[in-house]
Length: 256
Length: 256
Image (cartoon, rainbow over the protein chains, first blue to last red):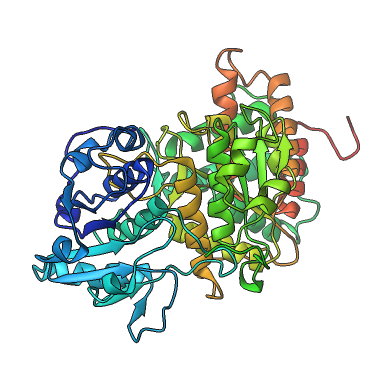
């Protein structure tokens, strides 16, 4: 499922830059790169990674997201890392009594998309694993993002936090329809094909005395058709079920 | 940021059971437990974890989500793991040419919420790290979930996949369902009831020579079960279709 080719789709080009402030574990930086590329984000900036840079453990954890790691830029301070950006959001789980706007990742993603569409350079700050961002870093952000999670257990691993922001970002782009029925080589059955099958089934049920009384037949037929409609059968499946009914009634293809 | 008290909020109580099928690394199982508790999910089931159970690496990776690990239930087969559930969704990145409905995590979460609100027992299947779920497992699911991600780099770590489903589940909070399967006086069939019907049908098809060759039988059975799964039959409808099959084969109630 992993491949290196063209990780940037038009719809996700120019997504927010991800800025990791003093990340501690190389594994986490690599996992962040993987989560970023999953979401079509490729711009990674690192402020004073604890274990130095480059980092072999990061490469191992990136599971193929090397382009993100190779392109990562290093900075000494958060201020320098965001200097060229127009819009900076920051992630934090704690309210530090600062008067600042908090938004969910979903709202943040919509706002980031709007900024990107207006040609603004955007970025999202993530703090060190244990401590999170310090107030001086938070003051560099116009908006704070908090993820609505179980308040009794809300601590997210760094890469998971990056994934949730990236995921919501990606959902604002050209995403596939909410609901797709994959029919492979065949196509959805036409209503005519469906009704033809219903009548085949109901005809055999008439002969085998399934419908206990003429009065009940219409409602029983409705029940059967309702359920079978929900299958959204393909043309191929309709033929299969014709065969099933024929087999059960002991008739073979061609027989009346 | 982490604390053990009351991980279950009313709004997230009774969330979907997370079923990990043949998970390989203990670390991943632990990370899944952490992601689950982040999202207020506490019911974990494991089908044949490769490295056995309990697993110390899982505890380490859970970063305090021990209640989820302690409550995890073990199963030998996926079918047993879902037997008591009314509604089973499955996550997959690949289209395997099966005719089945795919939804996004967001839509899946809304539907799961609707089922939970209707008192149905729900679960979501996740496959092994490398290979994902096999077709026989997928046939136990009424709906397949795929996460819209960078198509050129879409492979998610197991815990990240669990997090995205759990995150969307948590976001549904108190929101009203937008799609419910109205079951009237009855309820969705349990997987056990469904499998029992499948076996009734397939047994009769064996006797009537529907399966043209032993080699073809498994794939033909999969095709039938796939289509029938999509009906999301109620318990009442399962009984009706038992009657349909019995009638077609010319047997009456009570006859062997």
